[in-house]
Length: 221
Image (tube, rainbow, N blue to C red; front, top):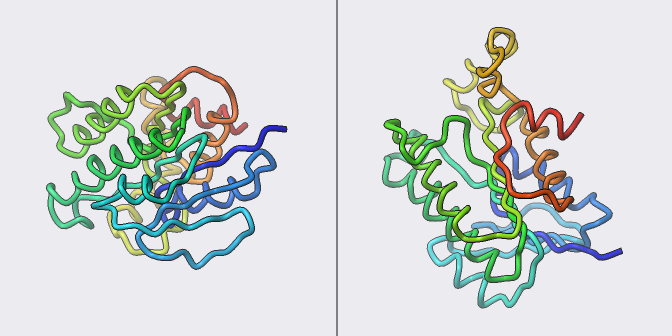
């Protein structure tokens, strides 16, 4: 059986933490390289931790000499946490597209990106526009297989306090019932489900696609 090497960014986040555990447990992956800003407090015989300055992300990956088969990008922040629109864009556009280029240069032919429902490069909403611009930039890189995931409210233990999101999470079961038909894509979804759908998508030779709530649930059913 051919073994796969995965490159992961965002391993300490809500979705990324699930991705890391799933990839380490996967019998088809013999190596998982986690690109982080600080050393991981995690060890495993399959795990390699590449610590880098994300402002020099591409150079860090290039100089490491790593070779990979696929890339998983679970980076992301909020405007409030970043502190400004410019700082938000630096993470959600600059770092994410730099990571995609770095993964491709290291040999990745498959790529999975966490975006957000409503993402559109033409959106009048800054957050959604940046997400859409990132999606477009990554798609245009020409990966043989590029899968973009657009979850709504993410459910799971973040290990940090986000009061606005905590309220949304608490209301999610009720809100989900009211979101039917075309509005289903806005339903809240478990971060673990998103991670499972990402791994499932790259495990096959499926063509590039955008995955929303219904597709992610179906992929993990």
